[in-house]
Image (cartoon, rainbow over all chains, first blue to last red; front, side):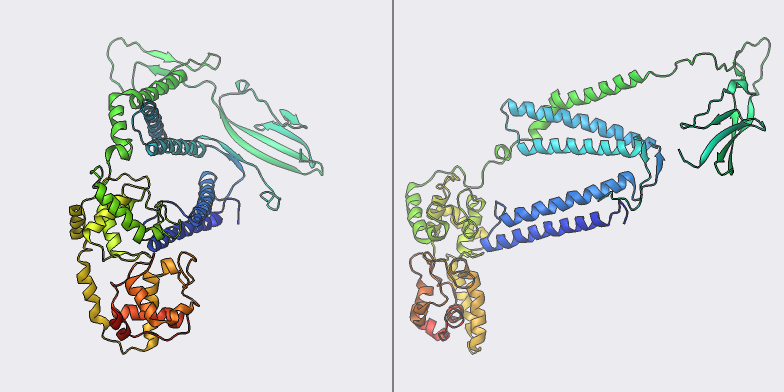
Length: 160
Length: 367
């Protein structure tokens, strides 16, 4: 198994799905016991969600790393190859990012002026901004940033 | 540096003498191509090792210091007449490179301006304000309250509901309406309580551990709902008898009397073995009794007595009457059929204890 192998991330995502499913079934079971959906999460559900999210993030990082750097790291210099399509996507995402940040400011101003603005809408807008920003950074790393992989002893102690 | 290397010699074309000899890293060689004629050349890099062996690497390259003249004014195969004037440009490596095209700063400023315009549009334009109002308003501001909210509260109904609640509901949902987390749901802030139809259905049909209160009249239901919707911090408004009747009509939970009569019919196969009756009783128990008396009959003393290992259950009549009529916090379960009562009584007596089963005739005699 090499450094960016996707076997472990795959099973991490599988575990995450299993834990989320267990949370859902637990909620269904509790709802059946109590005669209706419960508004609050049980301690068990919080625990399942926490570990599910842990596995989800771990799995996503693994797949993300494999996509950015390749499953097998070949020594040498890697010149970026940005294409027109990637540039177009990056430009569009930059415009979307600017629009989202402007809209976020609009929501904050409305909120401060006392209008009944939903906190969920603010959170979703901010989350979308962060997500688009992350995609832009990933595109930059993948298609615009040169990279150099140094030779590493196959039996070295890194990674641990 | 690789310790096996002695030196590196760089030759040009077929020259016998190296143009450069490198002995120490960094191995950087310098070649002024202006001293060479334009055209193809060969570079040979010979590595000499300490043991006398040599390794040669050949590299072809083309020197192009003086490119062809570029003619501007006459195109290829163009027909011309009379006197013609055209420009001739010749490459010159000494001439400074002309800065043509668009300045990088123009790109930077252009991008910044475009992005700022987009940003400002979404931040300050009237369209964005409308969008924010439509998309991001709090749900409370747009969808105000469930049915019945804001309706005036009938004080008489409220007082009656308070008494009924203390009698029938408080044992599980507690006097403060906060329930017992994990066992009995809170009514304070409950979505079910906010919805008149759902609440009526829940009380009449029970489910999820809650017994069905089919004996309650529409007025009783209106009273209880008026109370629980306007106490414990709730302010969902009053509920009239008409609201309850309407909910009963819509919810399908109507006519407790009819439903009470219906289950009597399948009581016929009483000839089933006692073990079948007990197995059936376990299902009835888990549906109707386990939420208070515990899934294994262990109860929650002192509020809900244990049924397992309880000598009082030796008295068959007491068991049947308690199920039929209830007592204290325990509601009556007269809506159950004779068969179901016989089954659950047999289960608690014979399975949770060592007493004999109960027959349908026993129940019939006491109903």
